[in-house]
Length: 207
Image (tube, rainbow, N blue to C red; front, side):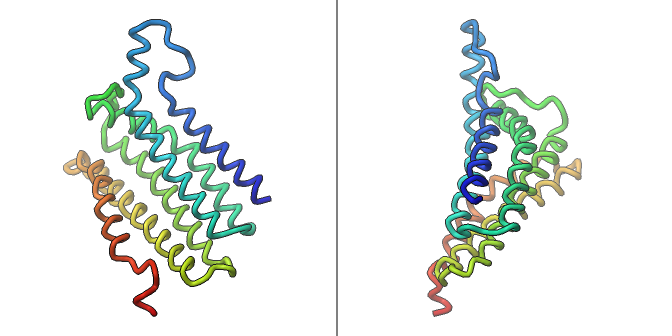
């Protein structure tokens, strides 16, 4: 059961990546189209990195959870469902951000606040699901103390990601600050880095 569920999850994430792939479904038939396709590389790289982040987190979760049960399966299926929906706002965000950075991305024609409201909703839903998965992993009776501490740390990291997304969503609802909503995600390397540095991964403070 576990192997089939993980294979299904891997296939869903792989399909999500194909939706991000540069150039769309048709091969370029001219130099101009080829150049345009190559110019989409930054957008693809951004989207690929975020999808890979969620996929790799699920791989790590499985190493802690082991076989799991019905709740493990339910949360995994929910993650699959969300990634297949999240890929569309992610694609729009990645292309818009790539264009902002000077790449070949297509700027979003609508309101930036609306874009990051939808994108943030998907990001928060997936990050919150990862929080639930790592908390659920603590139900594994075979976890030793060190692995239990590590699982708790992983859950907190994803909680930081969830809260950051929520802050960005709230900012998109206020016209005066909606343009700053994307910048909230830029704080993640610092907030997560600080947590990883300060967290008692080896349980020494409780020893």
